[in-house]
Amino acid sequence: MLMGVFYLHVLFAMLKVVPDPMAVPAALIQVKLLAGHVSVFFFLSGMGASGLKRRSAQSVAIQSVTLLALAALSHLGGVLISAIIYGLPESWRDLFRVLVRPIVYGTGYSTFVAWFFIVLSVVRPLAWLFERNRLRFLIAVVAITLLILIGQWLHLPHNLYEWRNWPFALLFFMIGMHVPRRRQVPAWLGVGGLAASLAAAWLNGPDIMATGLCWTCNIEFLPFPMVGAQGFLPLALASEIAFLLFLLWVSQLRFIPHIPWAIQWFGRASTQFLLLHGWMIAALWPMLTNFFPFPAGVYPYLLVLILNPTAHAAAYLALKPLLNHMLAFCFGLSRWLVEMLRRLVHRTRHRK
Image 1 (cartoon, rainbow, N blue to C red):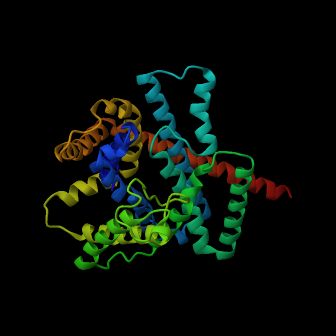
Image 2 (tube, one colour; image 1 turned 60 degrees about the horizontal axis):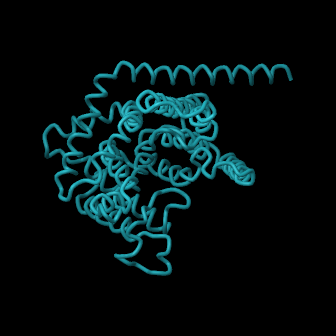
Image 3 (tube, rainbow, N blue to C red; image 1 turned 135 degrees about the vertical axis):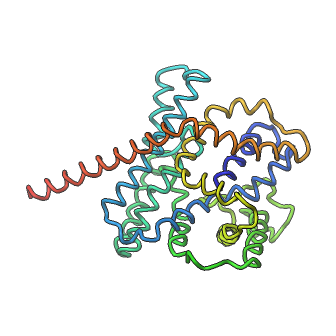
């Protein structure tokens, strides 16, 4: 999944640069069929949190604050890298807006990965609350909905703290929490899941109830698992769940030597790779425009598939100590903040 994200972000860059996305149909088709499956990260996150219900409130809070810190670190690093390579904004006011505004509003970051940390920081405690106390979960959902409505009434950014991703991410996270670890997915279900997910992504569109199932409609529509961009909801959900079945089946395969080892190597440092990827986008995105659009044929895409993970692996090995220290700093900061808050609450209650 990480290597797929690395690859698709290059295609995204090309679609944003070319005047007409239909001029690069190979890139458009790949993005349309595959980009929405970024939601699988939430399934996987849930699979890694099967014991979340047994965690203490303090432990869950520390993990969420760590994720918020990682989002801020990703954004600040992206701004710094962009400033060093391409220059500062024209005025101090513009710099302040670029630097601080996304952290305050929780959206509009300088990197493509900060949003994931933000969404996961909200989803984890909500899933924990759902598992522990359904009534409190319902109260929390109502309170969050009211806050979102107030934000819209105040004309704040339309996606404060990436809330449009929360419903899908929470559902997928909780499904992941209950996926049986040891149950094998048969080949027919895995291959069928891939076929169903690709077909659902291709057919999906916001006007499907009017047009019906149409292979040539909504070609430029990119279905994403977020409120307002999901297209036809049943197809959006079916596509992601079917793709999860395919991914679980693929994870069982062992017929290519060394591939499982390479995948596990990337997976063990997934957080560091996500941080690194966001910064590499900030550094290289404007330079990539010199290579767009790709020449016709399959070879440019194969080259990107090979070079992208190689470049990320080389950068990770070079910056591994720095990345690990930054991750440890975020965790230490969050633990300190949560402990300070706990002490403050305790003192307040004691005084009463």
